[in-house]
Amino acid sequence: MIAQQLSQKQIVRPRALVHGVAPLPGRSCLRGPRRFSPSVAAPEREVAVAEQPAVEAPSAPVPAGGDPWEGAKWTKYKWTVYRGVAYDLTSFIDRHPAGNWLIQLAIGRDCTALFESYHLRPEVAVGHLKRLPVLADFPVDAVPRAPYPNDSDLYNTVRQRVRAEIFKGTEIKGAHRSGSELAAAAILGYAVAAYGLYCWDANLLTGTLLGLAGAWIGLTVQHCGNHGAMSTNTWVNKAMGLCDDLIGGSSLMWRYHHQVSHHIHCNDEAFDEDVFSAFPLLRFDARLPRKWYHKYQHIYMWMAFPFLQLAFQYGDINALLTNRTAGATLYGADQQEKNTVLLGKVAHYTLLAGIPLLLHGPQAALIGAAAYTLTQSIVLSATFAVSHNVPESKPLQEGPTQATLDEEIDERDWGVQQVLTSANWGGVIGNFFTGGLNLQIEHHLFPAISFMHYPAISKIVADECAKRGIQYAHYPTLPEILSRFSKFMQQVGEADQTPARGVAAQQLARL
Image 1: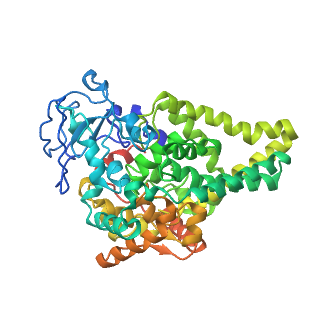
Image 2: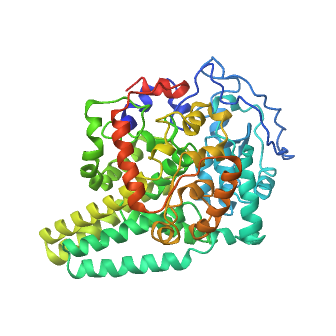
Image 3: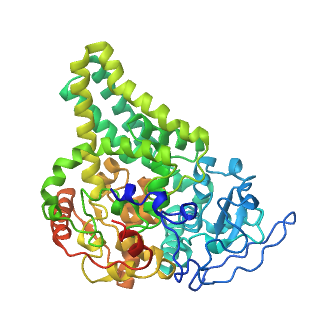
């Protein structure tokens, strides 16, 4: 897998990996106009930071100011970079309104895209930044630059309309993070009932019913909770997020590979883990090398999807040992968070196999656990894969998506990229059963908003896209987008490799 082949030992400066790759000489991580630049003043107790110019990436291995990841001058801080300015988060982590487990994602990297895509009222969030210590002389040019969502006219316009037309000012009280509680209660209620049947008689049927519960929790409860969008209560969100560990995943690893890698860099072949994590078994992108067997992947992928859950198990443990998922280093993860990985595995396998083993014997436990794993994997695969793997959302052919992804990161319109690289299907019913993942475009634009608001938001997004002539992909039903996905997988499996540029070219050359 690429995740293994792009290991730290293969890269010259592994400590500089923020989104999985290091900046190349001659490719600036800070280049491009800065159209949205909120004034962030340095607190009195710190020396004011000098204006950070937009400069080319240095050719020297360690820039002036030292190494931000290993230099003694900086390792004592829990630093982050926002729009070219470095801040010390140390004193703010435990005071973060949405919880320390979310802000820790920003440690050790440029947090601009995370920061701006998670706050519906950016002016309020920037006010918190103004009160943080600014780190003078910090080597900002060593930190790969994240996208700047607030430079997107589409994103800014849609966000303003969402605030005005849907929430009408109530977002200041957290209305955008509310609305999913009853859905969560219904889903967890079904899961408890399914597990009761499973303990009463572990067999193929009850294992399948429990697998559906595990998939439903994975799509909705843990997903919304880990985004901090299930409730205005931080502890409710955290508890819902930890449900991922109970169903066989890892809430910690999910937050890094999903939020830091995938959400920020959707369908970027160098930065989005979801593009390359299944390679070489599956080729989701024509920019990846083509193997002879990929022309059959639209057939054999259906035999591989039932084992998705087992792939998660391997990935979680490997990430714990290496301190990085395929797409992001775990810079901000503390020991308590890392402990949840192993504790979660113990809890999961105790519930799935241990208790049924004691109650019904090894054969029943094995059959029930297998039914659970296969069912959950198939449902998750079918709903995850279609969101970003149809012709409209991939650069397989010339068009707006290819043109956008061919641009350097700092030159792209982040809002437009999220729309072009995602695809929707269904409506309100699909939204309830998938936690809003069927409305993937809206989810990528507003990951911190409760999924119950996505149907209303989708009307605004579609309207603004129509005004600008921006592609907005929507399929009426899941079978229709599944059919389109299957056809795409055949096409991309047969396509010649498309030359990659910049950082991606260096990464893919190692395959």
